[in-house]
Image (cartoon, rainbow, N blue to C red; front, side, top):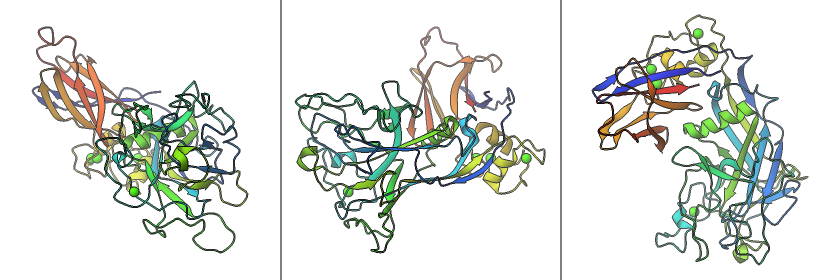
Length: 442
Ligand SMILES: [Ca+2]
Ligand SMILES: [Ca+2]
Ligand SMILES: [Ca+2]
Ligand SMILES: [Ca+2]
Protein backbone atom coordinates (compact mmCIF):
# COMPACT_ATOMS: atom_id res chain seq x y z
CA UNK A 1 0.00 0.00 0.00
CA UNK A 2 1.38 3.35 -0.99
CA UNK A 3 0.19 6.70 0.15
CA UNK A 4 1.13 9.62 -2.02
CA UNK A 5 1.28 13.20 -0.90
CA UNK A 6 1.87 15.95 -3.45
CA UNK A 7 4.06 18.72 -2.15
CA UNK A 8 3.93 22.36 -2.76
CA UNK A 9 3.83 23.11 -6.45
CA UNK A 10 6.54 25.14 -8.16
CA UNK A 11 5.66 26.97 -11.34
CA UNK A 12 7.50 29.38 -13.53
CA UNK A 13 5.25 32.12 -12.25
CA UNK A 14 5.95 31.27 -8.62
CA UNK A 15 5.00 28.76 -6.00
CA UNK A 16 1.43 27.57 -5.60
CA UNK A 17 0.17 25.35 -2.84
CA UNK A 18 -1.14 21.91 -3.66
CA UNK A 19 -2.15 18.91 -1.66
CA UNK A 20 -4.15 15.72 -1.93
CA UNK A 21 -4.43 12.60 0.16
CA UNK A 22 -4.86 9.76 -2.31
CA UNK A 23 -5.55 6.63 -0.30
CA UNK A 24 -5.47 5.23 3.19
CA UNK A 25 -3.43 2.34 4.57
CA UNK A 26 -3.75 -0.08 7.45
CA UNK A 27 -0.80 -1.03 9.61
CA UNK A 28 -0.42 -3.86 12.06
CA UNK A 29 0.33 -3.60 15.80
CA UNK A 30 3.17 -1.23 16.41
CA UNK A 31 4.73 1.01 18.98
CA UNK A 32 7.97 1.87 20.72
CA UNK A 33 11.02 -0.35 20.53
CA UNK A 34 14.30 -0.15 22.40
CA UNK A 35 16.47 -3.12 21.60
CA UNK A 36 19.93 -4.44 22.31
CA UNK A 37 20.15 -7.95 20.83
CA UNK A 38 22.56 -10.24 22.70
CA UNK A 39 24.69 -10.78 19.62
CA UNK A 40 24.58 -10.35 15.84
CA UNK A 41 22.72 -12.85 13.70
CA UNK A 42 25.80 -13.01 11.55
CA UNK A 43 29.22 -11.47 11.39
CA UNK A 44 31.91 -12.15 8.85
CA UNK A 45 35.48 -11.17 8.29
CA UNK A 46 35.52 -10.24 4.60
CA UNK A 47 39.03 -10.86 3.34
CA UNK A 48 39.76 -12.63 0.05
CA UNK A 49 42.26 -15.11 1.43
CA UNK A 50 40.18 -16.77 4.12
CA UNK A 51 37.30 -19.12 3.35
CA UNK A 52 36.01 -19.32 6.93
CA UNK A 53 35.58 -15.59 7.62
CA UNK A 54 32.10 -16.23 9.04
CA UNK A 55 33.36 -18.69 11.65
CA UNK A 56 36.41 -16.79 12.85
CA UNK A 57 36.50 -15.46 16.43
CA UNK A 58 38.54 -12.47 15.30
CA UNK A 59 38.44 -10.24 12.24
CA UNK A 60 40.55 -7.32 11.10
CA UNK A 61 40.03 -4.06 9.25
CA UNK A 62 42.84 -2.67 7.17
CA UNK A 63 43.81 -1.25 3.82
CA UNK A 64 46.10 -2.60 1.18
CA UNK A 65 47.85 -0.57 -1.45
CA UNK A 66 48.63 -3.57 -3.62
CA UNK A 67 46.95 -3.01 -6.99
CA UNK A 68 45.63 -6.55 -7.23
CA UNK A 69 42.89 -6.45 -4.62
CA UNK A 70 40.53 -3.97 -2.98
CA UNK A 71 42.12 -1.06 -1.14
CA UNK A 72 39.70 -1.74 1.72
CA UNK A 73 41.10 -5.24 1.90
CA UNK A 74 39.88 -6.38 5.32
CA UNK A 75 36.26 -5.50 6.16
CA UNK A 76 33.72 -6.73 8.72
CA UNK A 77 30.11 -7.45 7.77
CA UNK A 78 27.79 -7.26 10.78
CA UNK A 79 24.16 -8.32 10.58
CA UNK A 80 21.11 -8.42 12.80
CA UNK A 81 17.86 -10.08 11.75
CA UNK A 82 15.21 -7.83 13.25
CA UNK A 83 11.95 -9.38 12.08
CA UNK A 84 11.39 -11.19 15.38
CA UNK A 85 12.12 -8.00 17.33
CA UNK A 86 10.33 -5.30 15.34
CA UNK A 87 7.39 -6.14 13.05
CA UNK A 88 8.64 -6.20 9.45
CA UNK A 89 6.98 -5.42 6.12
CA UNK A 90 5.65 -1.98 7.05
CA UNK A 91 6.42 1.02 4.82
CA UNK A 92 10.01 2.11 5.65
CA UNK A 93 9.04 5.64 6.69
CA UNK A 94 6.83 4.19 9.46
CA UNK A 95 9.99 3.23 11.38
CA UNK A 96 10.93 6.46 13.16
CA UNK A 97 14.43 6.19 14.61
CA UNK A 98 15.77 7.84 17.76
CA UNK A 99 19.12 6.16 18.06
CA UNK A 100 21.11 3.50 16.27
CA UNK A 101 24.56 2.52 17.46
CA UNK A 102 26.97 -0.37 17.02
CA UNK A 103 29.77 -1.26 19.43
CA UNK A 104 32.70 -3.52 18.57
CA UNK A 105 35.61 -4.49 20.80
CA UNK A 106 39.32 -4.46 20.17
CA UNK A 107 41.14 -7.79 20.26
CA UNK A 108 44.62 -6.37 19.59
CA UNK A 109 46.82 -4.55 22.09
CA UNK A 110 48.30 -1.19 21.11
CA UNK A 111 48.57 -1.93 17.40
CA UNK A 112 46.84 1.22 16.14
CA UNK A 113 46.43 4.87 17.09
CA UNK A 114 43.00 6.20 18.09
CA UNK A 115 41.58 8.68 15.57
CA UNK A 116 37.97 9.74 16.20
CA UNK A 117 37.62 11.92 13.06
CA UNK A 118 37.33 11.23 9.34
CA UNK A 119 40.53 11.51 7.32
CA UNK A 120 40.01 12.96 3.84
CA UNK A 121 40.55 10.45 1.05
CA UNK A 122 43.48 12.50 -0.24
CA UNK A 123 45.47 11.64 2.89
CA UNK A 124 45.59 8.04 1.63
CA UNK A 125 46.13 8.75 -2.08
CA UNK A 126 49.90 8.85 -1.97
CA UNK A 127 50.31 8.60 -5.74
CA UNK A 128 47.88 11.40 -6.52
CA UNK A 129 48.94 15.01 -7.18
CA UNK A 130 46.19 15.92 -4.71
CA UNK A 131 47.80 13.92 -1.89
CA UNK A 132 47.96 15.70 1.46
CA UNK A 133 49.58 14.29 4.61
CA UNK A 134 47.32 13.08 7.42
CA UNK A 135 47.02 15.93 9.92
CA UNK A 136 46.16 13.84 12.97
CA UNK A 137 47.86 10.68 14.13
CA UNK A 138 46.02 7.45 13.38
CA UNK A 139 43.20 6.40 11.10
CA UNK A 140 39.49 6.27 11.94
CA UNK A 141 37.44 3.08 11.99
CA UNK A 142 34.23 3.79 10.10
CA UNK A 143 30.78 2.26 9.69
CA UNK A 144 28.81 2.34 6.43
CA UNK A 145 26.09 0.30 4.77
CA UNK A 146 26.40 -3.07 3.09
CA UNK A 147 26.06 -3.60 -0.63
CA UNK A 148 25.79 -6.93 -2.42
CA UNK A 149 26.51 -8.35 -5.86
CA UNK A 150 26.19 -11.63 -7.78
CA UNK A 151 22.55 -11.91 -6.80
CA UNK A 152 23.18 -11.79 -3.06
CA UNK A 153 21.15 -9.59 -0.72
CA UNK A 154 21.06 -8.80 2.99
CA UNK A 155 18.65 -11.72 3.34
CA UNK A 156 20.70 -14.29 1.42
CA UNK A 157 24.34 -13.40 2.13
CA UNK A 158 25.17 -15.50 5.20
CA UNK A 159 28.25 -16.26 7.28
CA UNK A 160 29.18 -19.17 5.04
CA UNK A 161 28.45 -17.41 1.75
CA UNK A 162 31.48 -17.11 -0.55
CA UNK A 163 33.64 -14.01 -0.55
CA UNK A 164 33.35 -13.71 -4.32
CA UNK A 165 35.75 -14.21 -7.20
CA UNK A 166 39.36 -14.66 -6.09
CA UNK A 167 41.83 -15.19 -8.91
CA UNK A 168 45.23 -16.86 -8.95
CA UNK A 169 47.87 -15.31 -6.74
CA UNK A 170 49.95 -14.33 -9.77
CA UNK A 171 47.01 -12.56 -11.40
CA UNK A 172 46.76 -8.86 -12.11
CA UNK A 173 43.24 -8.75 -10.62
CA UNK A 174 43.05 -11.17 -7.76
CA UNK A 175 39.87 -9.66 -6.31
CA UNK A 176 39.21 -6.02 -7.24
CA UNK A 177 35.53 -5.18 -6.91
CA UNK A 178 34.47 -8.80 -6.64
CA UNK A 179 33.41 -9.23 -3.01
CA UNK A 180 29.81 -10.41 -2.71
CA UNK A 181 29.22 -8.14 0.31
CA UNK A 182 30.99 -4.82 0.45
CA UNK A 183 31.26 -1.51 2.27
CA UNK A 184 28.74 0.76 0.56
CA UNK A 185 27.76 4.43 0.60
CA UNK A 186 25.24 6.47 -1.38
CA UNK A 187 26.33 8.16 -4.57
CA UNK A 188 25.01 11.49 -5.84
CA UNK A 189 21.89 9.74 -7.14
CA UNK A 190 21.16 8.00 -3.85
CA UNK A 191 22.29 4.57 -5.05
CA UNK A 192 24.52 2.36 -2.93
CA UNK A 193 27.97 1.97 -4.47
CA UNK A 194 31.05 -0.05 -3.53
CA UNK A 195 33.40 1.93 -1.29
CA UNK A 196 36.15 -0.70 -1.37
CA UNK A 197 38.32 1.25 -3.80
CA UNK A 198 37.42 4.88 -3.17
CA UNK A 199 41.07 5.82 -2.70
CA UNK A 200 41.54 5.04 -6.37
CA UNK A 201 44.91 4.87 -7.97
CA UNK A 202 47.59 3.90 -5.52
CA UNK A 203 49.97 2.63 -8.15
CA UNK A 204 50.19 2.62 -11.93
CA UNK A 205 48.26 -0.60 -12.35
CA UNK A 206 45.17 0.69 -10.60
CA UNK A 207 43.00 3.15 -12.51
CA UNK A 208 40.03 3.52 -10.18
CA UNK A 209 38.61 6.97 -9.53
CA UNK A 210 39.20 8.68 -6.20
CA UNK A 211 36.16 9.86 -4.28
CA UNK A 212 35.58 10.86 -0.68
CA UNK A 213 32.53 9.94 1.37
CA UNK A 214 30.74 10.78 4.61
CA UNK A 215 31.05 7.91 7.07
CA UNK A 216 27.72 6.88 8.59
CA UNK A 217 29.50 6.66 11.94
CA UNK A 218 33.03 6.70 13.36
CA UNK A 219 34.19 4.38 16.12
CA UNK A 220 34.71 6.38 19.31
CA UNK A 221 35.45 5.95 22.98
CA UNK A 222 35.65 9.08 25.13
CA UNK A 223 38.07 7.36 27.51
CA UNK A 224 40.69 7.26 24.76
CA UNK A 225 42.90 10.19 23.84
CA UNK A 226 43.21 10.96 20.12
CA UNK A 227 46.53 9.65 18.87
CA UNK A 228 47.08 7.15 21.69
CA UNK A 229 47.72 3.48 20.99
CA UNK A 230 44.46 1.65 21.71
CA UNK A 231 44.90 -0.95 24.46
CA UNK A 232 43.12 -4.29 24.36
CA UNK A 233 41.62 -3.41 27.75
CA UNK A 234 41.07 -0.02 29.31
CA UNK A 235 41.29 -1.59 32.75
CA UNK A 236 43.13 -4.80 33.52
CA UNK A 237 40.23 -6.17 35.51
CA UNK A 238 38.51 -9.44 34.51
CA UNK A 239 36.31 -10.32 32.78
CA UNK A 240 38.14 -9.15 29.69
CA UNK A 241 35.84 -8.07 26.91
CA UNK A 242 37.97 -5.82 24.75
CA UNK A 243 38.12 -2.01 24.61
CA UNK A 244 34.88 -0.85 22.99
CA UNK A 245 34.53 1.55 20.09
CA UNK A 246 30.97 2.77 19.58
CA UNK A 247 29.55 3.97 16.26
CA UNK A 248 26.62 6.38 16.66
CA UNK A 249 24.91 6.28 13.28
CA UNK A 250 24.19 9.66 11.72
CA UNK A 251 20.40 9.58 11.53
CA UNK A 252 20.36 13.24 10.47
CA UNK A 253 21.18 12.01 6.97
CA UNK A 254 17.82 10.91 5.53
CA UNK A 255 19.50 8.50 3.11
CA UNK A 256 21.27 6.74 6.00
CA UNK A 257 18.12 6.68 8.14
CA UNK A 258 16.20 5.46 5.09
CA UNK A 259 18.65 2.57 4.65
CA UNK A 260 17.98 1.45 8.22
CA UNK A 261 14.23 1.92 7.85
CA UNK A 262 14.25 -0.25 4.72
CA UNK A 263 16.31 -2.84 6.59
CA UNK A 264 13.71 -2.93 9.39
CA UNK A 265 11.00 -3.28 6.78
CA UNK A 266 12.72 -6.29 5.18
CA UNK A 267 13.96 -7.54 8.56
CA UNK A 268 17.67 -7.78 7.69
CA UNK A 269 19.88 -5.01 9.07
CA UNK A 270 23.47 -5.08 7.81
CA UNK A 271 26.46 -2.80 8.30
CA UNK A 272 30.10 -2.91 7.26
CA UNK A 273 33.04 -1.76 9.39
CA UNK A 274 36.05 -0.55 7.45
CA UNK A 275 39.34 1.20 8.05
CA UNK A 276 42.47 1.93 6.06
CA UNK A 277 45.12 1.10 8.61
CA UNK A 278 48.03 -0.09 6.52
CA UNK A 279 48.77 -3.79 6.48
CA UNK A 280 52.44 -4.75 6.58
CA UNK A 281 54.15 -5.72 3.32
CA UNK A 282 51.56 -4.00 1.14
CA UNK A 283 48.82 -6.15 2.55
CA UNK A 284 50.36 -9.59 2.23
CA UNK A 285 48.86 -10.70 5.51
CA UNK A 286 50.80 -11.06 8.70
CA UNK A 287 50.97 -8.36 11.31
CA UNK A 288 50.69 -4.65 10.86
CA UNK A 289 49.56 -1.50 12.62
CA UNK A 290 45.89 -2.40 12.15
CA UNK A 291 43.17 -3.40 14.62
CA UNK A 292 41.73 -6.84 15.35
CA UNK A 293 38.11 -7.17 16.49
CA UNK A 294 36.19 -9.74 18.51
CA UNK A 295 33.44 -11.44 16.51
CA UNK A 296 30.54 -13.44 17.90
CA UNK A 297 32.52 -16.70 17.77
CA UNK A 298 35.04 -15.20 20.22
CA UNK A 299 35.36 -17.08 23.52
CA UNK A 300 37.02 -14.24 25.42
CA UNK A 301 35.85 -10.96 23.94
CA UNK A 302 32.28 -9.70 23.70
CA UNK A 303 30.47 -9.87 20.34
CA UNK A 304 29.44 -6.81 18.31
CA UNK A 305 26.49 -5.02 19.90
CA UNK A 306 23.57 -3.18 18.37
CA UNK A 307 21.38 -0.61 20.11
CA UNK A 308 18.35 0.61 18.27
CA UNK A 309 15.53 2.79 19.58
CA UNK A 310 12.52 4.10 17.75
CA UNK A 311 8.83 3.82 17.06
CA UNK A 312 6.91 1.86 14.48
CA UNK A 313 3.99 4.17 13.76
CA UNK A 314 0.62 2.46 13.79
CA UNK A 315 -2.63 4.14 12.78
CA UNK A 316 -4.16 4.46 16.26
CA UNK A 317 -5.33 8.06 16.72
CA UNK A 318 -6.94 8.18 20.14
CA UNK A 319 -7.60 11.95 20.12
CA UNK A 320 -9.08 11.81 16.62
CA UNK A 321 -7.07 14.68 15.16
CA UNK A 322 -5.71 12.75 12.17
CA UNK A 323 -2.22 12.49 13.66
CA UNK A 324 -1.29 8.95 14.81
CA UNK A 325 -0.51 8.66 18.52
CA UNK A 326 2.92 7.13 17.84
CA UNK A 327 3.88 10.01 15.56
CA UNK A 328 2.70 12.68 18.00
CA UNK A 329 4.53 11.08 20.92
CA UNK A 330 7.72 10.59 18.90
CA UNK A 331 7.93 14.26 17.92
CA UNK A 332 6.21 16.05 20.80
CA UNK A 333 6.10 13.60 23.70
CA UNK A 334 2.34 14.07 24.07
CA UNK A 335 -0.92 14.23 22.10
CA UNK A 336 -1.52 17.94 22.65
CA UNK A 337 -0.68 19.27 19.19
CA UNK A 338 -3.62 19.91 16.84
CA UNK A 339 -3.37 18.89 13.19
CA UNK A 340 -3.63 22.42 11.83
CA UNK A 341 -0.95 23.95 14.08
CA UNK A 342 2.50 24.89 12.81
CA UNK A 343 4.73 24.98 15.91
CA UNK A 344 8.00 25.14 13.94
CA UNK A 345 6.72 27.98 11.73
CA UNK A 346 7.77 26.41 8.43
CA UNK A 347 4.35 27.02 6.83
CA UNK A 348 3.57 23.31 6.92
CA UNK A 349 0.82 22.17 9.29
CA UNK A 350 1.39 19.19 11.56
CA UNK A 351 -1.03 17.25 9.35
CA UNK A 352 1.06 17.89 6.26
CA UNK A 353 4.31 17.16 8.06
CA UNK A 354 2.87 13.79 9.04
CA UNK A 355 1.72 13.16 5.48
CA UNK A 356 5.03 14.09 3.85
CA UNK A 357 7.37 12.63 6.49
CA UNK A 358 8.99 15.88 7.58
CA UNK A 359 9.73 16.74 11.21
CA UNK A 360 7.06 18.99 12.79
CA UNK A 361 9.53 20.48 15.27
CA UNK A 362 12.25 21.35 12.76
CA UNK A 363 11.82 24.40 10.59
CA UNK A 364 14.36 23.14 8.02
CA UNK A 365 12.37 19.94 7.57
CA UNK A 366 9.38 20.60 5.30
CA UNK A 367 8.46 19.41 1.83
CA UNK A 368 8.75 22.80 0.17
CA UNK A 369 10.29 23.58 -3.20
CA UNK A 370 13.18 26.03 -2.93
CA UNK A 371 15.65 27.66 -5.31
CA UNK A 372 13.33 27.21 -8.28
CA UNK A 373 14.91 28.61 -11.42
CA UNK A 374 14.67 28.36 -15.15
CA UNK A 375 17.78 27.48 -17.12
CA UNK A 376 18.39 26.77 -20.77
CA UNK A 377 17.82 23.04 -20.27
CA UNK A 378 14.65 23.58 -18.23
CA UNK A 379 13.79 24.02 -14.58
CA UNK A 380 16.10 23.28 -11.66
CA UNK A 381 14.87 23.21 -8.07
CA UNK A 382 15.55 21.76 -4.66
CA UNK A 383 13.55 20.41 -1.77
CA UNK A 384 14.38 18.89 1.64
CA UNK A 385 13.93 15.13 1.75
CA UNK A 386 12.62 12.97 4.57
CA UNK A 387 13.94 9.57 5.63
CA UNK A 388 12.37 6.54 4.03
CA UNK A 389 10.49 8.47 1.36
CA UNK A 390 10.62 8.22 -2.39
CA UNK A 391 9.84 11.17 -4.61
CA UNK A 392 8.33 11.67 -8.02
CA UNK A 393 8.25 14.94 -9.94
CA UNK A 394 5.13 15.80 -11.90
CA UNK A 395 4.33 18.64 -14.25
CA UNK A 396 1.15 20.35 -15.37
CA UNK A 397 0.27 23.08 -17.87
CA UNK A 398 -2.71 24.26 -15.82
CA UNK A 399 -2.49 22.92 -12.23
CA UNK A 400 -5.35 20.57 -13.14
CA UNK A 401 -3.90 17.81 -15.29
CA UNK A 402 -0.67 16.27 -13.99
CA UNK A 403 1.79 14.00 -15.74
CA UNK A 404 5.37 12.84 -15.17
CA UNK A 405 8.16 15.40 -15.26
CA UNK A 406 11.23 14.88 -17.43
CA UNK A 407 14.46 15.00 -15.47
CA UNK A 408 16.57 13.41 -12.78
CA UNK A 409 17.01 13.66 -9.02
CA UNK A 410 20.35 14.09 -7.30
CA UNK A 411 21.27 14.57 -3.64
CA UNK A 412 23.98 17.25 -3.64
CA UNK A 413 23.82 17.96 0.10
CA UNK A 414 22.75 16.01 3.16
CA UNK A 415 18.97 16.08 3.32
CA UNK A 416 18.52 18.04 0.08
CA UNK A 417 17.32 16.78 -3.29
CA UNK A 418 17.89 18.67 -6.51
CA UNK A 419 15.76 18.02 -9.54
CA UNK A 420 17.24 18.91 -12.91
CA UNK A 421 14.83 19.01 -15.80
CA UNK A 422 16.07 17.22 -18.88
CA UNK A 423 13.17 17.64 -21.23
CA UNK A 424 13.34 15.99 -24.63
CA UNK A 425 10.65 18.43 -25.82
CA UNK A 426 12.61 21.59 -25.06
CA UNK A 427 11.99 24.35 -27.43
CA UNK A 428 10.07 24.70 -29.51
CA UNK A 429 7.86 21.72 -28.50
CA UNK A 430 7.71 22.27 -24.74
CA UNK A 431 4.55 23.61 -23.15
CA UNK A 432 4.88 27.38 -22.88
CA UNK A 433 3.86 27.32 -19.22
CA UNK A 434 4.26 24.42 -16.87
CA UNK A 435 4.19 23.84 -13.15
CA UNK A 436 6.06 21.24 -11.19
CA UNK A 437 5.19 19.47 -7.99
CA UNK A 438 6.90 16.85 -5.84
CA UNK A 439 4.95 13.76 -4.86
CA UNK A 440 6.13 11.96 -1.73
CA UNK A 441 5.51 8.22 -1.48
CA UNK A 442 5.22 6.70 1.95
CA1 LIG B 1 44.30 10.63 10.93
CA1 LIG C 1 -3.81 11.99 17.25
CA1 LIG D 1 5.34 22.92 10.61
CA1 LIG E 1 8.99 21.02 9.88
